[in-house]
Amino acid sequence: MLISWNQTTWQSGEDPIHDIVISVREADGSEFLAPWKFTNGDADNHFYHASQTRLSGNDLSFLSYIHNGQVVFNRFNSYGSIVTGETHITDSGDANNPDAMMLSTGDILVAWEEISDTREITFDILDGDTYLSILPGPIELTNPADGYNQFVSVTADSNGHGILTWT
Image (cartoon, rainbow, N blue to C red; front, side, top):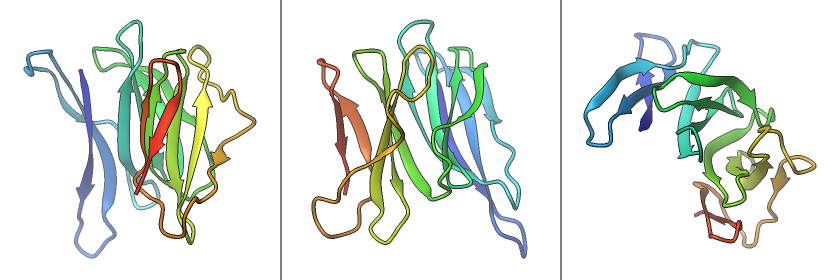
C-alpha cells in the first residue's frame, strides 16, 4: 500500500519548504519501500495536502495534491513506481485540500476548496481510462449557507454517485 504525507522543512531566515513523502508498505505493515521525498520543493515550488485513493486493477494508487495552488495528480503502481507524471486538474492557483475517490463506474471524483472569501467547494470527474475530465470543466458548488467552506471529503455509494461533505 502506498502511504503519503506532507513534510515541512524549516530553514533559518527563509520560508519553509513543503514536500510530499511516499512510502510503500506490505499488507502486514512491514516496509516494502523506505520513505522517499517524492517532490522537490524549493522557495518557488510548494507541494502539500496529499490525498490518495486506490484504483481498481493493477493495484494502482491515485495521488492528488497541491502544487503552487493547483490541483495535480500522479498514478503509482503497488511498488511505488510512478505510472503517470504530474497531471494538472486545475490551474487556478487558488486550490487547497484536495480529496479523491474512484466511483463504481471507474471514473474518479476529485474535489477541493478554492481559496476565496468563502472558500468555495469545487469538483471535477475524470474518466477512469483516460484521466481526462468528463465535465465541461471544474464545477464550483453554490454555497448552501453563509460561511467558510473547507476540508472537503469525498466518498461514493455503490450506484456511482459521488458524495461530498465539508465543514
